[in-house]
Length: 454
Ligand SMILES: [Zn+2]
Image 1 (tube, rainbow, N blue to C red):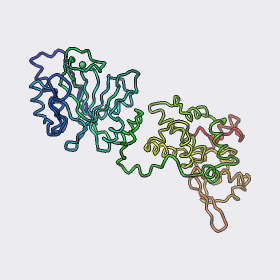
Image 2 (tube, helix red, strand yellow):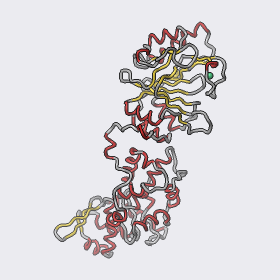
Image 3 (tube, rainbow, N blue to C red):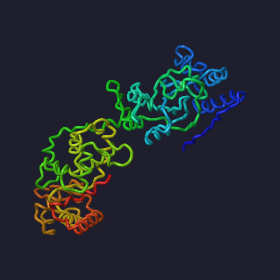
Image 4 (cartoon, rainbow, N blue to C red):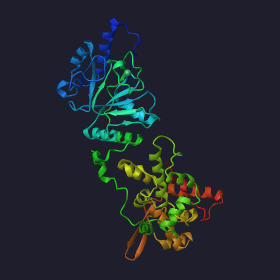
């Protein structure tokens, strides 16, 4: 549970109250931050430090000294990007309130220990960083530059400030001291930083969250300084391109009656199946049809699921085909995304095979259900289907991880690993549905592409 305290600051504070109000406001901030020397000493009515080296550790102020400095008419800030007793802060500075996309806004907001508005109507959020690796990633993503993707124009919509300091309430500035680069500046009068909320229980932002933020902001770590991921999760993320011969892999391990690798690609891209239209859009990097946020990330997961369906849920095949997509993929760029995507494809529990219709698959499955082991001959007898067709259906069931094949001496057995009553009943339902549509023949039967759920 987090608690956010809201403060409203009156616009016309009487002078005699101002000093007390300023102290109160500063205390509200300082009491919710670690009791360390984290404050910077700033000049009376301008942005920036009052002395040389004002962000050096030896020049930082304790809470008490910062308060005294404020009461003497000075301004204060908080140092950024410096580890002080294990704590570091950065600042997310949004040019105007409410311009961030909601998903990005909610990530930053949930980690904000301090939210305040600047004299130029920007919204600032102070966020604690959980580790050096996270900090390095954030530095690498922001590259000391500003982020400017949300609106057209010359202004920086979002700045991620990772060093120096951030002026905080109740500091105030005289606009005549402002450089005119800020569009929100009137050039005259005095305005102050205004506290909006403090949230002492906000969690420090971690590596994965910064990674995700980078993805949402479409930021790529700068090449020379891309930091290592701190966790062990990197170890088991497969590389984007597998070392396989795709044609051989297809022939050996993907259910198929007469399709070659190229036939299957052709059918997946241009064949007559429900969802093909959306599929080809996604294939070409058009994610309009994907709902929600992070359309490209979700769209790529959907693509991968389809590929899994058409290629026997074969991870090497999925990786190979994902690596051939004709646009710049998150799959290639982000190991974490790649890992999630490949895990996600394991949710696909049905596979496609041309030329095997549901009726035959159902007959074979029904005769496997209830038996621990069986053979192709037995199945052919029971189902009155040719042995070749039984084998084709078994290829699909094997790719779906429902059966295994075993050999004892010269005799080959089929072991039932997961053909349950539930599976058989689901297959029956699909058969009925296609019967109603009069669509049971193998030319147009798409072996339930619709089972690919996202
Ligand atoms: Zn100004």
